[in-house]
Image (cartoon, rainbow, N blue to C red; front, side, top):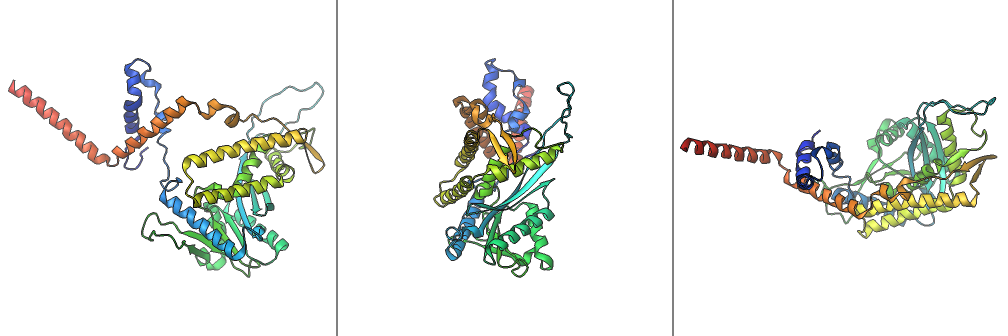
Length: 416
């Protein structure tokens, strides 16, 4: 496995080992085999240079996205009186994890056994900025372009029935099957016919610059979809711009703790059980304040981008805080309901969840020693990258020095 022009993993291991672990080996504190190649690879995972928050490409994309929404807000009041016209839509998924095995049962009674093959459950939801779920679907299997098309068209139809023929703005991420869905919805004209480009007036980056990152959005057929519909992709690798992603985090956390009471599930497949659990979470667990809280978080994140106060560490800390909040919300609801959640005349138990990511500080690697070691590794990796930008020249230099040493040794032997 190679990393562009920055050298191979073996080169990185040799370099980082010499920088950090060689002194420990010389002091007999460790043996060479204690440091595996995987340890070094963890610090050299391939990443998209444009995916980081600190990259100028990402900054340009985020500012264009925010400016475009603000321009729509000035004209259509999407952040105030017309919050219902701005939707955050997306899909997510969960998998069933089960293994067939024998178990104990009271003599004379049959044990409920569900087929155990693993399967994936995908679910789609559209959240209005007014704090309501406009459209929800669950599906056994993965998302495709065709399913995304059905979901988006279902969202538009449900919104039209309630709010009429006004402007509807849908934001979602730009994964490949979303682009395929837009292509299918564009008909014979093609998706290029619906594509629009926006660049904020204050941008000084020319089109020829690699940092140039305009906002590309799509304007669907008015006659076909009952009025104006804008589909606006969020910036790449920026889930914090989508409040529905925050809601999905709460949904997945709660789904881990919901248990059926008595025979609420019957003898259904595991995938069908998980699908029902998701419906229980969306229908009876999520509260209005949780939905509005996710939207407030998105507004604060957008404001932080405008103030230039967003970086990788703060974004990571924000996501950790959301995980803690999911746990707190779950514990509060569990205490308020007595651990019993009712949904459509059925009862479900809210079991305690041991969240290692929140409860175990050692798992989080927040000790001073671990933080210092991580910072040292980062510094060594950056040093390795900067010194190996041109591997070919470095190899030529090393070979030339080796030839010079051999020539000097040969000359010394011949003189003797």
